[in-house]
Image 1: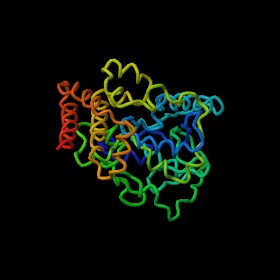
Image 2: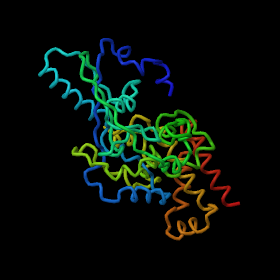
Image 3: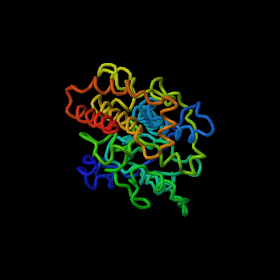
Image 4: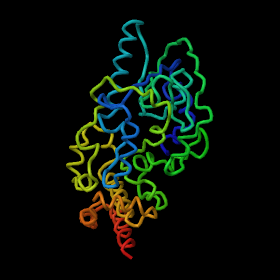
Amino acid sequence: MHYMAAHGLKRARPAELVPGTVSVITARMDYLPANTPLGWQAIEFDRLQHPSEGIVSVYARGRDYHKVMRSRLQKLSDQIAAELGPLGYRVFTDSAPVLEAELASRSGQGWRGKHTLLLSREAGSMFFLGEIFVDMALPVSVPVSEHCGSCSACIDICPTQAIIAPHRLDARRCISYLTIEHAGPIPLEMRPLLGNRIYGCDDCQLVCPWNKFAKVSSLPDFDARAGLAGSQLVTLFAWTEDEFLRLTEGSPIRRIGHERWLRNIAVAMGNALRLRGDGDVNRAGAIAAAGEVDVAQVLAALRSRVDHPSEVVREHVAWALALALAEKC
């Protein structure tokens, strides 16, 4: 990502990013919604089998974690300063070129899994990370040992094979990167692999055995807001820009903007139409029999955006419609 590269070695040298930094306090915050049922991983995997449903990553269904964690880290910092006296500090949570997972790993919060995310024996990986850079020397905590062993479940399941080797991720192939950080057209070869994922991807975490220990959040902030879990693609695609801004207010989704939102959904709808010609006859037939893809409805939704002002949206809509025509031949 360009903004990470632009800051060079500041990413690995906290004192260069925030002059005067002597120590870094790391923190993690669980984000599974309070009403998450047992067997939640299977439920999330099942969503991927319903091509007319738009899948938003679990972490993004509630309030923007940047706001929640930054506020709590600020309060914690203020309390520390009240106890210790004058303290120079600055808080971060995915808001600057900070090597969060590496700092958390070195501080003993967990170890780097083969998918490169942080893993904890007590909490899996379904948590956010944050840091407090302070100008005070603190005792150094001890890293924990790794516990992935010979498991390669995260590598094997990645839809785009973005995990090119243990602990090595090609972000250019990662669905989370493509649907959130990437601007402009999504590479043609990647589009069919996105399936119905319209914001992020959880597959490598869903399959990880350690996430049987993932904990639900004690905060209502991360409860899924209505309209983001189980919603139909055509419904989400119909949002105007004003509706998008209103319905995603306070959500991390808002940061991608309406254009990327429509781009991602157009790809998902194209993939839903593509399933009519899926090589897996049983799967395609089951989907058709269940009436899960209302072809006429999807086509009408796509055609409603054919003349969208954004060239990116128009291009992805055209791609999806071309798939529909191809499957008729």
